[in-house]
Length: 114
Length: 114
Image 1 (cartoon, each protein chain N blue to C red):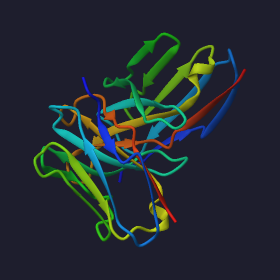
Image 2: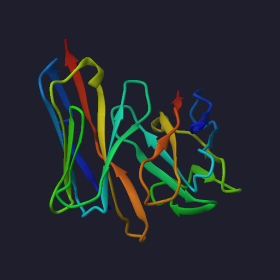
Image 3: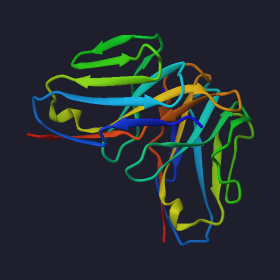
């Protein structure tokens, strides 16, 4: 079974530029999450999707971050414009349905903002 | 909102010694999960606890869920170099919006002195 795919693995941009990350969850997984993990901290939930609907985006900085999962499969997370404090690993995770068991994480996309 | 804290933040042990990390939630949880993240890697699921007072074992790892379903612990007996990494608890509880939300703890970073 293929795992959660993320790209790109690494990205370096200047502040005020934009960046987009892509995630393809495990086939059939209805629930998809984007987490931000700053070095030395635990993953912080940015947004949770159930199929193509948003369940929770309360911690997403909506003035600069956006995310979509238009067809209920893969998802894109965008940052525009980026700030220095956005330097982090962006982790995508999925599970078959919300409230059911483990999250399967992708390898993550490491963003450095200069 | 829900907060999940872990102590200690760091733990250095001699190989063969025991290790324990403690997890405390500000709210009652429906379940708690534990993840391990190796340096440079992504979180990998270890176990889920659901019942009040539940204890589960995986070889040298023992996981406990508190009676009030607000705290948990992970104990590793006779640590090995392969145990190196950061251990996160993740508590699932209802957010202020009524959805189940998985909140990661602050993590305990374990290093082993050979």
